[in-house]
Length: 61
Image (tube, rainbow, N blue to C red):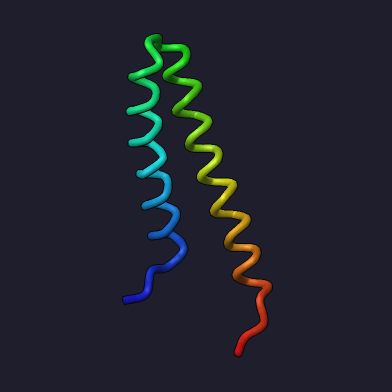
């Protein structure tokens, strides 16, 4: 089964939200938790964009 870009991004963002909530809850304050959640989401989005650029630029065999 192949996964398209939208499904991959959705799964990645969902995973980052879960990790952000878990790490944010352990941070002890709403401010730290919110920042942790935002950092996880932004990092996942950037990683997705980088991987997509690398994948699209690779030679087709």
